[in-house]
Image (cartoon, rainbow, N blue to C red; front, side):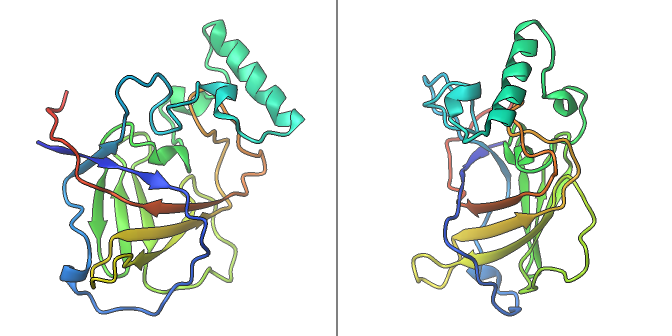
Length: 209
């Protein structure tokens, strides 16, 4: 079985969702198979994050003094053998967004005109990204760990084939959630907005463990 690499980058451009489209399989990328995180050999930083920077405060997250104290306490507890602020992951509970997308285990993508489904194969089981042109619900969204995701397919090369999926995910979320295994905290109100651009590309075949 071969594995592929998945790069998930922040999308800075605002999204505008178009109308519903008839399904033309030739226009969509072939993302069949298993996709795993991209790890740069020889760089000691944490995979799925900026490997050129160390864990914890080395990631240079823009934390307020209150949340710096939360991370300091988490790292101190982990240094003593505890779980710190990373309690849900250590108990095999859902990580939630955004950590559920770290591809700790390989993911699978199922593409349809109305939605793209991501099989997480870890503590979080799946994620659904609507691509049917819908707007954000007028009614209150039920809190979940994954949030509510709306996406738009992009043809960057103008060759008639989509090669990028822009996604925005909003809450309210269930929590608590953290960014990474050090317990880098998200705000305790569980109100978050995440923007992503999915850019899978072929990787070298590897033998699964």
